Amino acid sequence: MRRRALTVLFFGLLGPGLAACATTPPLASPSPSVTPSPVVPTVSATSATPTPTPTVTPTADSVRLVLRGDGLGTYSFGAKQADVTAVLEEALGKPEESSQGIRCELDDSSPWAQTVSWGTFWVEYDAKDTSKKSPRTLAAWGATAGSTLPAPLALQDGVPLTLTFSQLKAKYPAGKLEDLGLGDGSKRFTLPNKIFFVGAGNKPLHVQAGVFGICE
Image (cartoon, rainbow, N blue to C red; front, top):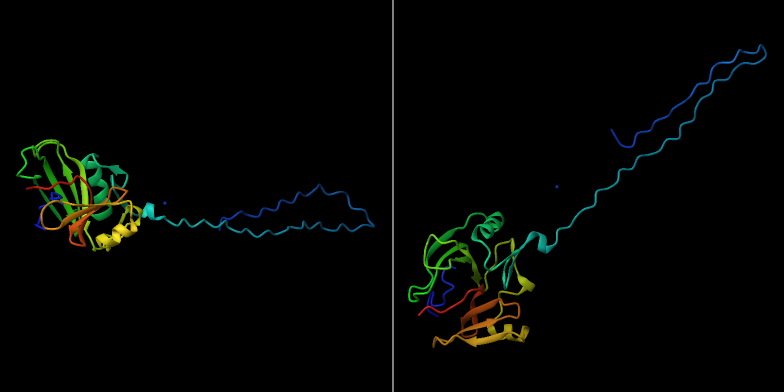
């Protein structure tokens, strides 16, 4: 498949103290035949047992940024670039690469797009027009099939990245496999959750979600 022929383009010691209070009554006049006996108060000691703090075990959803068929994390496609960027950079740090330009130079209606990436994982933001100055929104995300996602990331529904198209079809019979019509065997398999795999022959090369098109 031709490189970039598919317009994914840019890819949170004081325990309970013991207190003994003894009240001493007024002394009576001693009787010659009586020797007063001191009253010793009896204190019953109680051990203070601290209450243990429960241990909270984080769930997968609380420690991972889930890549969904309709967005990522808590954001859907169309979310403001600044909002999504803040979440991604908190989880992954600054992008390793960034590129921008017209999404498809061969299409006059193609918008201005910016892609940022961390290793084999990328995120695309698109404007509504061809202006570099226009605000951009979350348009797509993708990764290399067969690769390992950065630790904070996880695919929706635990979709594996290592399956062939045949295995994907067997595992997800409700998914849709289609030829992309490029004449080179390029195809796409779309899962019920809208995540899709793109590749050629029986081998997916990319896993993606969001905007997708062919630039030719």
